[in-house]
Amino acid sequence: MADIISLLPDHVANQIAAGEVIQRPASVVKELMENAIDAQATEIQLMINGAGKTVIQVIDNGMGMSPTDVILAFERHATSKIKSADDLFSITSKGFRGEALASISAIAQVEVHTKRADDEMATYLKISGSKLEDQEVSVAPTGTSIAVKNLFYNVPARRNFLKSDKVELRHIIDEFHRVALTHPEVKFTFMQNGSELFDLPAVNFRKRIANIFGNKIEEKLIPVQEMTTVAGIEGFIVKPEFAKKSRGQQFFFVNKRFIKSPFLRHAVSSAFQGLLRDQFHPGYFVYMQIDPKTIDINIHPTKTEIKFEDERNLYAIIKSMVKHSLGMFQAAPVLDFERDPSLDTPYNFQQNPPSNIPSIKVDSRFNPFKDSEKGIPKASKSSWESLYSGLEMPNDNSADEELKLAIDEAPKVFQLLRKFIVTSTRSGLLVIDQQRAHQRVLYEKFLTSITKLDMVSQQLVFPKEVELTPQQIALFGELEANLNAMGFVVKQKDNHLHITGIPAICNDKQLGQLFEDVFSPPDNHEQVASFSQADYMAKILSKSLSIKGNLTLSVQEQQALVNDLFACKDTLICPFNRKIFITLDKEELEKKLD
Ligand code: ADP
Ligand code: MG
Image 1 (cartoon, rainbow, N blue to C red):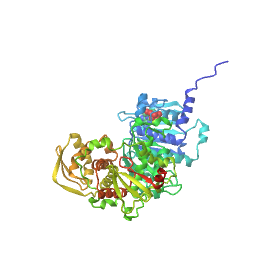
Image 2 (cartoon, rainbow, N blue to C red):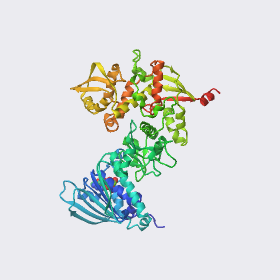
Image 3 (cartoon, rainbow, N blue to C red):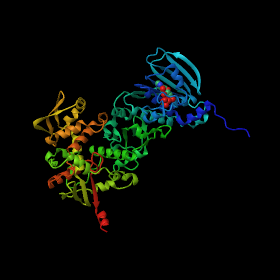
Image 4 (spheres, rainbow, N blue to C red):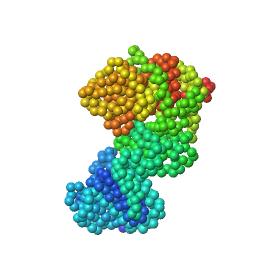
């Protein structure tokens, strides 16, 4: 019998491969816009006719291509973005497969003008069905213009598969939104059949969201941010009362790339639990920066799904971050305290005189370093687990659980092992980690004072001098405004800081350690600056100033701490994502005694 296997001709192979990358006009829009971003364009124009079925044109003012490169660009696996397999683990560009232009030109008629800034003349190319039909020197501005005409003209089956203009236009707008939201620093315009759909100037994230979804959305946005070793996160959630029946306002971005993640979406939804009516979906715009080595964006051909190495922690972080912001901005119901209805006011405890905070006495026998090795338990898996409760049982009643935690009128408290505070609730027993509780209280207090600029300072009788290294001086420049907002009165003189005032809740004996902590942040400080410096500062200060384990507290101090904790917006976890307390309710006690 004769051999029956033969190699497919290139143009057929290209057409088949094209089907993976280009499903519809919106896929072309995505690829062309992403190429423009990768080419460092600051202005991108999108023009379509006939819902992209007739013409899709993207014009950018990016770096352009040389006459040779532009021809290579249409070859399969031709890319300027990676050189070796190693590069796959540190991708910062949108594209890297070198497939888009080859695929598009296999199934459409493509015309290109491109010019680099230093070149006198531009290059014009015309390619149809993978065939180079024309190549000329032309006159065009710096950048690249690619027009894609009659998509699927040579693959009738696919062309017939396209949906109505309305549906295809919807897909294009969705892609446009995703790219435009990822890059608020780039100016975008979008024309459809000669009339303007969007004109988005270069702005910040918040304004970009407003320019796309209407100015009214701005007042419905609640900021979220979190800086952890797993991810740096910032963005916005939409207040629960403005949730939508569609999922049209749900956006996750990882390293400047739109992604879909049902798993992380669940983290957000579970934080909204109890706040939304049935069939309504929360809105969110969440931007994450994650070490590219810990993610795999290669899992899906069109790259909207990615795999995270640290998925479970990311889930917990996002859930607690959203919960925290909902609480901070008073979108979530507070604990059901019969004893004090005024707790409905966010952060009302900050108006309390500072004496309400347990005073921080330094125990001279107590060595903080020894303590941090032995005394504080490491975050165990179990401390995360409660945060996943919603994942395993979407309908659990953890919100009710929280409500049951209301403390009795005047909480009876006692200290256990100089580390825990034990108190009773209406439904059982509560064991609170004193250090974490205090960190939470201080953290919220500092965060509020940074936002509201109303921290009370106390003047130092003996001003203090702290010497700084040149790096620390640079860092001081960045932190100064937040330090002031937190109640520090600090001036820099040459390589010294001259401290004349400190927050009322701080004591001057702690000052040395505190400034050491502030100026030698454990993590790389660029990250701090780029994500949420205020949040980070609040965390450092709360860690530095909090009472530690192994410290005896008076009954009044214990009571004050319990009250302050339950006046916090998030009472469940400390700023470093560890459980603050555990409960033992009647049933559990009865079961244990059975
Ligand atoms: P990839 O983006 O995966 O590298 P593409 O097929 O999308 O693959 O593009 C191939 C190459 O063509 C890119 O690597 C880039 O060098 C070049 N290119 C494509 N579009 C542009 C553009 N708008 N401006 C400058 N260069 C471009
Ligand atoms: Mg590309």
